[in-house]
Every structure is written in structure tokens, then in C-alpha cells.
Length: 323
Image (cartoon, rainbow, N blue to C red; front, side, top):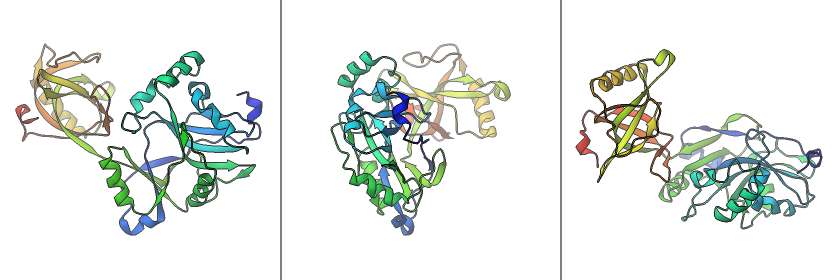
């Protein structure tokens, strides 16, 4: 979309949520709860002339990467700026970031974007409106902006406005866990929209998953971490041996990192213990006898852990105890 068509629309940087716990039951009536999506954040600019522009969190124009969303420009006859998340759904209707990755970065290749739109359809989840018909509404409370957004009736095969549930956060969080979803975002009903701010008025609550893993290797750190592990290479027992499950590089104190360094040095071997050599530069291998516990968000389609964080050593477990 040519830049001149956006002259009447103010630019917004997305407001961000702060990680945190679920508000206590006594305070949940002060929040609206939305399902946390796993996709690409987008500010949506609709001038009211039948066109639309999508901008990423950094402000980059990503419109051409998602041609199936172009018709959204005709769904509103008034200038508007909306906030949402572009997702791709798996076969169970859950947002799958790994699927969406095949759609990202195609703004410079319209023909490939059109082809991928047929293979991996994108869907835009709308959850806020910050400007409408020359009316700046970002300073309205969240619950009023939601009323405005839902009143626009923006529902289609490629976009939707899922409901925000007021109160009942405990039940909503349990529902998302049962459904295999990532979690919730709790938004204070009285909160204004703060462009570019990571606000405590919005809280993202992820389901914490834990897993016992076997360490099969490590990658040395740099700088002040020279000689210490920068990352551990994790494995799970499979029928054919130790399967690579990903790497973890966060979650340790300095003391724990030094303890791990000693244990790793004592277990050094020359051959990779995984069934397939991980594509990790500079890896060093160890006897697969060290067991630890990690926290993680989800898994990739290849079974790798996403966003893992080291939790603790498990000296009470031997590798053969891991199933």
C-alpha cells in the first residue's frame, strides 16, 4: 500500500504484556482474559478505502506476506488501527508458530507468498482497536475498547475477534491447559493502551511444562563464561538410543554453572552420544549420565523443546530412570 494512504492514520507500536502469575481469585473480576496466541504480532492499518497495511512489532511492512488478509481492507468502511496476532492453525485448531514460520519473511516474494497462502493459510486474531474513524481511543479503558472492537463484527474465514472473558481466570487457564494451548493474557479492565510499553496492566501467563532430560553434550561460553558451559545439549531416551531434544542456555546461577562445568569435564568423551549429531557448532560430548530437569513452553514439530530453561540437577535419577 502506498505510504500516502496512511497519512490520516497514526502509527502505533504494540503494547506488550509482562510475564507473571495469574491474578488471585479475589482480583480476577478486574481483568479480561484472552487466549495467548503463538504467532506474529501485527498492527493493522485500515484507511477505509478498501486497502489494508500490516506492520510487524518492529514496524516493518509485512502486508505482502499474507495476501489472504487483503480483503480485511474492505470489511471496514471507516479508518481504523487494530492490534492482533497472525497465526497458523494446526490440525487441532491450535496456533502453531513453527507452521507460521513458513509464511514469515515472504514480503519480497508475492508469488511465493500466494503459493504458501494456499498451503498454510494465515488467520488474524484481533484483540484491540486503538483508532477508529478519526477518533483516538487508545486512552479509553480496555473494556471500552473491547466493546468497540466487538461491535465492528470482524469475523471471516481469515480473521476473527475471539471473546475476552471477564473474571473466571482460574477456569480459563485450566481450559487452555486441557486444550493444549500456550496460556492466557490477563488485561486489567481499566488499562489504557500504552504503545511500545511492556506494561504490568497486561500479564501473560504461560503453562509451565517440565521434563527430565539427559545431558549428552555442551557448548563452551565466551567472555566471562570461557571454560564454562554456555549451553547444554539435551536428550531423551528413545527405542534407538539418545534422541536430541534441543539445547538450554539459561536458568543457572554462577555456582550451578561452575558445578556443571566440573561434572561435564569429568564426563568428556570423543564420540557424539546422540542417535543423530545435533547441528550445533563447537559442541563437546559427554557420557550421557547427567540428569537434569528443564522447564519449557512447547515443542517444535521435530520434537525439540521451545524456550527451555534449566531448573535443577537430578542426582536422584539415573539415565535409565528416564522414560
